[in-house]
Picture 1: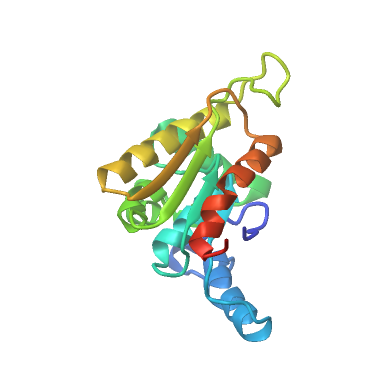
Picture 2: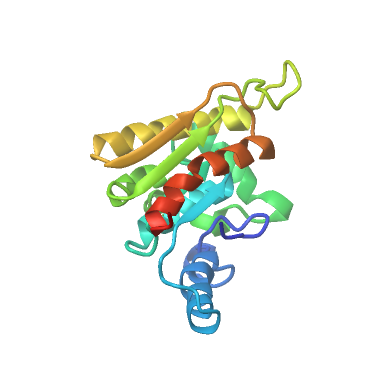
Length: 210
C-alpha cells in the first residue's frame, strides 16, 4: 500500500510537457522496487492496494505495469475521474490543493485528454482483466460507522465511478473481479479498514500465501 504524499496522485506529473518532479510513479515502480529487492531482500511477488487516491494508484500501477503486481484492491478509489463533469471538477479541485497549479498533474482534461485517459482506470480496464481485482465503495449515505444523517458527496461520486469501472471490467471479460458495493457508508477509515480485512484473503492467495 504505497504512500504518495498528500497530493501526489501516483503519477509522474506532466508539468506542461516538461515532466520532472514530482515523479511518484517512477519512484514506486522503479526506484523503490529496486531498493526493496536489492537491498532489503524483498521478492518480486507483489500485490497492491490503496484507499481513495491510493485506490486509483493501485489500479493504475497494476494496469500500467503489466506483470508487476499479481492482484489489486481499491477501497473507495477514484476509479473513473473522467466519468462526468462533476468527477472532473472534483479531481481538479484536489489537484489544486495547497496552492498547486492543477494543470501540472495531467494537464487540461480536454486538451490533454490522452494523458487523462492514460491515468483513468476505466480506460485501462483491458489491462486489468486477467488480474484479481477487488473494488469496494459506499454510496455516501450514513452507514454503521457514521452519525445519523451524515452524507458524503465524495463517496457518492466515487461510488458511481466504481460501478462504471466494474461494468467496464465485466465488458472486457475480467476473470477475477470481486466487488463489495456495500450501500450506506462514507469516505472514512473505519470502512477502509474493514475492506482491507475483507480483501486480504484474495491478496494473500494471489501471493501464494496459505
